[in-house]
Image: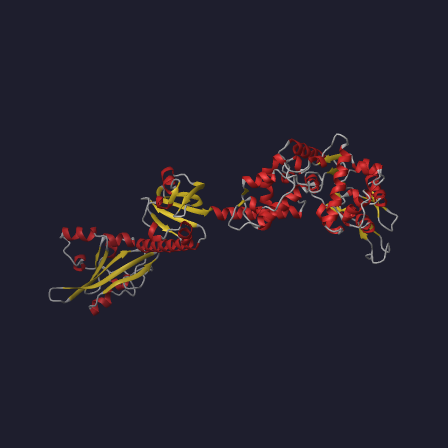
Amino acid sequence: MRGLDMGGAAMSQEKRSVYTPQKKQDYVAWDPHDRKLEVFLNSTYDAMIAVDEHGIISLFNCAAERLLMVKAEDMLGRPVSEVVPGTRLPLVLSSGISELNQQQTIGHLRIVTNRMPVRDSDNKIIGAVAVFRDITDIINLSGEITSIKEMKILLESIIESSQDAISVVDRNGKIILVNPAYTSLIGLSKDEVLGKSPTIDICEGESMHIKVMKTLVPVRGVPLQVGPQSKEVIVNAAPLIINGELQGSVAVVHDVSEIRQLNEELGRMKCLIRKIQSRYTFDDIVAQGSAMLNTVELARRAANTPVTVLLTGETGTGKELFAHAIHHASQRKNNLFVRVNCAALTESLLESELFGYEEGAFTGGRKGGKKGLFEEADGGSILLDEIGEISLAVQVKLLRVLQEKEIVRVGGVKPIPVQIRVIAATNRDLFLDVKRGLFREDLYYRLNIFPIAIPPLRQRLDEMPHLVDFLLKKLNQEYGRNVQSVSNEALRILSSYLWPGNIRELENVLARGMINMRFSESTMLFSHLPPLLPLAGSCDMAKISTVNTSTLAEALERAEHEAVVAALAANRGCRENTAKQLGISLRNLYYKIKKYNIASG
């Protein structure tokens, strides 16, 4: 039998003593023949137990039977104190004081009990009654309601604190919730949108709330213009379906300008990662014209072979960029890429840097010697930039590397094998230098196995829009700017210039133009550009092209001689400034002064 305590104690589960009344009806508080009263008491939802003035159970209705899972006939006529030790009904009998809304737990049930004395017409206490009800479901439902309220508060707090702009619409198509990020982004207050149609914030486009509530299908990445300022945003929206029924929709709005900023930052990070590795790939080479497309195709073929590559082209045409791209596209891309500027080092220093040295090879050397760059690049690629500037003595040692695939350190005798790809680059005519005795013929043919000539910018002027667009993106990353384009006038000027400094000079001009712009400007104008001379339409082309009485080589030499003389005069004989203006190394300048027998005064 289920335990019950009508007065706070549990009904005894032990075997109870039997009390047998002489007449059962002596203990019934109502006339057993009163069918109406019996039907009423047994049809009520509340459980009832009553005792007479002696504490004998005289009423036990059907609801009490169902709740306590016992039979009334087994309970009637028994002392309540025997059945329920510690019951409070005898106290109610003796005190005549009612006890109302007393909660207690019976097993897994929660009940609430009212205990009251029963009086006759003379106000004499003739018994007591306990009316009790199972409130377990009510307690559970109350807990669920409390949990729902707490969850609602929690979700609202999360939405309120979210950095994403969020709006929620109910099943009737009315906005019921927006967070501070939403009002800040859209430019409307809560009072202006709550209770309104979700179309209230739309300037251009369809409300995604309405769409997903019609289709019951989520949408992502939909561009819209919202708010008084027609701000560009991206919207993700989804229907709210609970227990199979549509209850509304929720939308998350993202500021497009913020997304652009993140994409730009991502681009900068990708660029930085590429610089840590080999810095450029073929994707970094702008090739739209047939000449450049053919050059890139040649370089791609070279990348798929282990052969030595000779890159030729004027200063600033992008020889180093091609070298990086060839390495990155080769099977050696996961190994080291080393660049050496041969014109920047003296002969002795270049030799020790390339080949390394043994301990004691020269004063001030590192204890234990030092690996050279050929050893460091073993398994990878090495770019020998300005290869035409190295001395004949170093050329001999370089020839051995190409022929024997081994090096000997300075001061050493032991050959060290190396497996590297050599990529050489020069702006000189090495074949002409061979004829003049300035470059070894055998080394020239070792280097010239796979020659790639990179066209100058003046032969690629039709690609100018693509080049400008590419360089603006690069400069935006470097300078943190957002320049989107150049004006038609500026592009016309850029496409008319001869660009003796090639791509490097174009990048320099665009960088200077960007510096001259305000941060609020996004289009580079002609007025932002530095002066550019000579223009293609105004220069004397005879000085840089063949003439009837000269070969091309002679015409170029004459133009080069005049350029050096003019630069020296403009810089009052200062060799360093002259070399910078001409875009060549100081050593190369001295070579040209000697070559053309230019007076040093």
